[in-house]
Image (tube, protein in one colour):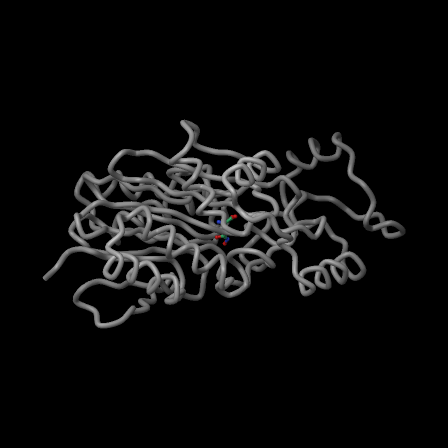
Length: 322
Ligand code: SD4
């Protein structure tokens, strides 16, 4: 049985799995480029509308993108957070890795970097996101992710002072739960290539109605994804504000390093989070260097992930119960 190549990614995004698989087996690219090929497919085809442009508008109605790529051979990482006006987030992340000595670029200045690398600048909103935002402002206007903000009934869209933000932060309660989560979110992918080399990456448009400027876990190495050639790789999806406090992808890789199976490793990493946040919703996929895969999740009805390897004739979607 060929242990590699193998592609594994979050959610039933089989178009992305197939794109990575074809890159590996037809073009015979390395793991890093296969991850970029797979995640780029999702960014361009907007897997479920939750990856790439035209999804998850923030409070201002803007879509921004977070992405990362990690090379398990060199431990080189490139990532972008809050990337504006550029659709190809993971390709920009790869450019950060390839053409700079930095790890993470953010916001407008990440856009400036992308422009200098000849990436196309375009509007990440669509008529649909513009309409959704308009409706949100008209009908709701409640700040989803601001703690214990009680909207003034007369001006429920009123501004919030910095003092408000600080006191709300320690107010407790009004925490977001899985109830606010209805879509398939981020693509996280791990690839082992024809040489047995490992890479991992993520791409996302984050969370709908996030506070502008919010960056999630996806572009943070060890949180969104992690790869180590000696061990394997892991990638995450879910409530990134919580996940980035626990580095679940790093933890899963470390668990595999000390002998845990991918499933056990993923369970340990998710369990570490739910011990502190019982309502946490999210999932983790993991693969070891022998090509064994596993996943664990919390507070989803179930969690599907996609796998392709030499023994499967086509991409298989595996569902785990949470
Ligand atoms: C984030 N983890 O920005 C990403 C998005 C996601 O379920 O996977 N949401 O928090």
